[in-house]
Image (cartoon, rainbow, N blue to C red; front, side, top):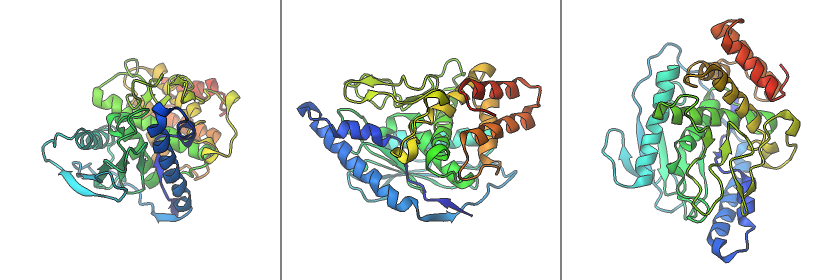
Length: 352
């Protein structure tokens, strides 16, 4: 079975279009940067239909090895991977983007190894590579199917994209999905693809900070916006639709239940918008169970993602049923975990 080609970026195209349309002189640089980023996102569409290499199952029972990281510097060009600037075990370089990327790859590897016994992104010790300083004022970060790529932002709306650990964890989680489930990047399967990346991106950040469910912000992309933006992050898992409300960006459009599900042909059928619904479901499970979200809630979602039972075109309902089945298998039909999963999906109005 072939998995879809993977080019997944953190900034939704609808947000880039809002910025690109700005006419204010103070935002001229941001508008130009957004237009360039949109052209880049559009170029992904041509490759998304191409087959990727055969997905290889993770090695069951294998002990995770140490990370093997390499950070490259594109030096403001759009050529990958760039020049190597920091390899595994080498000291910090003093360049913020380089060192944040290195640390973020390590934090992501640590979550999967410690919490889920997974050996890197592919489950087989895949070396983790990232390129920083990609392009000029590039307004995005993305996983291209092989490595992470980070722009420096336009400086007016977005700062550097290595600044948010949840973004690093989010994009690398697209790799986990690529190697384990191969979910289509369109409609509800695409929204689940995005949601799974938000879930594990949040868990990477929470595990690195050793935050409990109650202590966590549940924000994705916190710290990306400059001080000029009225907003906390790109998305809120706890309260979809509340991450930002800004004159330039508009209001966060994410729905929090199926009552407000957005039917659209843009953004591959609303993958960045409708992901708010399963995002909230996971957060509700974690809140109901308390403690650390990488424990029971994370185990349920991880088992569902990697267990081999998801079809490429999985719907919200099919995914909800799969998480309930995972909770039952892992913790029992009468367990608080199983009850929490069923209650969460009921709250967001996804029928089991």
